[in-house]
Amino acid sequence: MFLSLRDVTKTFGNVTAVDSVSLEIQEGELICFLGPSGCGKTTLLRLIAGLEQSDSGQICMADKDLAKTAERDRNFGMMFQSYSLFPNMTVAKNIAYGLECRKWRKGEIGSRVVEMLELVHLEDQLDKQPSQLSGGQQQRVALARALAPKPYVLLLDEPLSALDAKVRGSLRGEIRKLQQGLGITTVMVTHDQEEALTMADRVVVMNEGVIEQVDSPVEIYSRPSTSFVANFIGTMNFLDANASADGKVRLGEVEISCANWRLDPSPNQPVRLAVRPEDVHFQAQQEGLPNSVMAEVVWVEFLGSIYRIDLALGGDETQMIRTELSANMMREMNLSTGMCLPVVLPAEMLWVYGA
Ligand SMILES: Nc1ncnc2c1ncn2[C@@H]1O[C@H](COP(=O)(O)OP(=O)(O)OP(=O)(O)O)[C@@H](O)[C@H]1O
Ligand SMILES: [Mg+2]
Image (tube, rainbow, N blue to C red; front, side):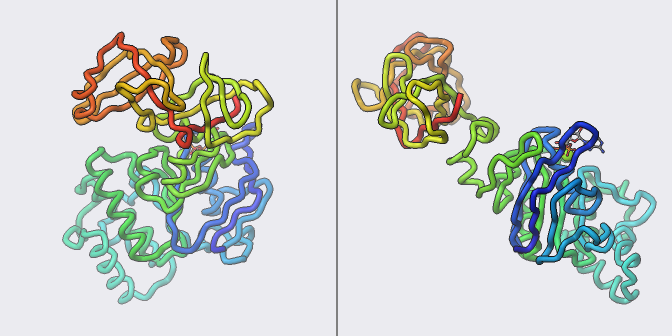
């Protein structure tokens, strides 16, 4: 394994920022740390960078323990949320700086700076000061500066969050293509799930210093291993239910089958049943289908290509589910508030977690 973390813990006073984290990172992959504010993402990244010392545990690169390798000797490229360029140096000088520190030869520095500027499409900006560049351009210079010394690993802490949505969208594609082209192992911190899902090979979902799940974006979305992940990624409906026999749960008056159990329940144990909005199926005429429940339409919202519809299961407003219907389907079904109709919760799309 290229980078490996074993039981890494870091506390600040009585706060455990990173709690016994183990993780294997493969060479060339882009891995995202995703989680709410304060869950330990930056601390974990800083531990990898060597900017923080762990209380216990081990961080290895290509089987070499990094404990005794100082930050400056790790040859990791870093890029942060704030552009953090040297304000009084030109773009070219900013990129050259790290190479001068590493005692590269003058001629090599010059050609590397040009190469890096071409890579981030800023070859005509080399004599500008950072203040003369847009935010997106400054982040591209920061990226070129991080990559110039040919780092083993690229570490990015919320690199796009200071930019407006449009620039963020285009730059994330640019960073990803560049990362894949260079094949550079990259660890990126973000609290933006769209960024993580679109860019990463694998996503590490963190909560209160621990890892909840490590998986591909599709797996994280479609097979969340904990209710925290289910709730944090995308929209998920949660319903109160009770475990019953044969892989079924009791939901009010009805029993429904569930394919995906994330606990081994005792009979009648309270559980949380989870289903995504797009997985709730409307059945206009047919009542009595398996896993069908009666629902009352309590809210209809027009969102352009789709409608968002909130339903109260069995008319119970504590058991709400949010659903989505295409505009075409909506025309066909002509739903309005107050209507009651059966909906199907397909067994294979249902997840059961502990209450
Ligand atoms: N230098 C420090 N001194 C004291 N506490 C710290 C320090 N750095 C981080 N913490 C605490 O450790 C916890 C994790 O912080 P961290 O910055 O790693 O979170 P984060 O996931 O990066 O959050 P954000 O999304 O807001 O950047 C927080 O409770 C934070 O207050
Ligand atoms: Mg942070």
